[in-house]
Image 1 (cartoon, rainbow, N blue to C red):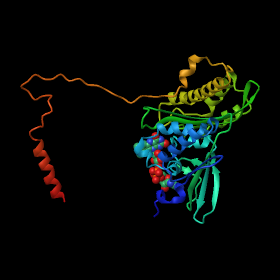
Image 2: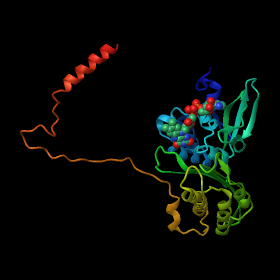
Image 3: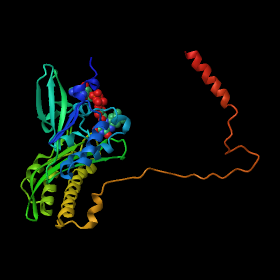
Image 4: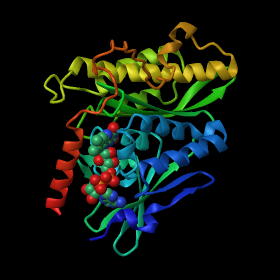
Length: 317
Ligand SMILES: Cc1cc2nc3c(=O)[nH]c(=O)nc-3n(C[C@H](O)[C@H](O)[C@H](O)COP(=O)(O)OP(=O)(O)OC[C@H]3O[C@@H](n4cnc5c(N)ncnc54)[C@H](O)[C@@H]3O)c2cc1C
């Protein structure tokens, strides 16, 4: 048996000209650090996908898990509620797969997930690395996750979305788009009809309305869905797309000063969620003299308990 976490070839993390090569055993914490370096060092238009992953990983489990869980483990376990798989798929990531003879083949993340916990891996193969391409000018990637709680909770619905826009004068149109949802089916699911609808369309309110109509019939959560909360989860699929559309429109409005139809009053819908560290103060009244209640006095039996513990430990040994 081989611990894949210790195989050097599976632990590479290489920043290339056109993207990032990430070994399958790289931990999620290491991944975040490298993504943050890329965001700090490269042009903003190149790192839209990097930012999506950093934001999604902020709400992924907590640091003990992220310090240990690997990129490849999260991918190959193919959870239908994985927070990262929709993002790999949406951001045009490629998976490099190696077999026991050393031959490497490459598949798009979009084609890797075949069904519930089923992936495109043969018994003699393993995931070697992931290639995450940098985004192009006009290309935007964004993450979404809604759970009962922000911290350390399973997504009710999550998503990774990407759109590539081209500009002609003061108008933008969609070259291509990827909308991938998690938590809505046995596998991370692309909204293929909506993607096709968006292709070639101008980036306008009309297109938004049309896409929302198509999306409702594209991602279907049935009444008897085992994960429940059907109405709410259905509404999340469309509201994520609405937020995505708003977010890009504000980005464009801010960069170019061209008004795309969204007033400032909608902006809070896309402001990133931040929460400062919790803090608290408690005031105790000093008890009157003559009682030890509330004073830092060692309990009489404390030393006895300590001795008992020592005896138990010695007996154990
Ligand atoms: C408390 C807790 C909170 C969590 N929160 C989240 C969350 O918020 N979001 C989320 O998406 N997930 C969450 N998870 C799931 C977690 O992220 C995954 O279980 C984890 O990423 C798996 O990584 P691992 O390295 O431990 O994989 P392992 O458990 O070691 O592997 C998983 C599977 O993949 C296979 N595998 C591993 N590496 C390779 C490879 N290179 N090639 C082929 N097969 C491989 C293994 O054989 C195994 O079948 C949570 C888990 C816990 C315990």
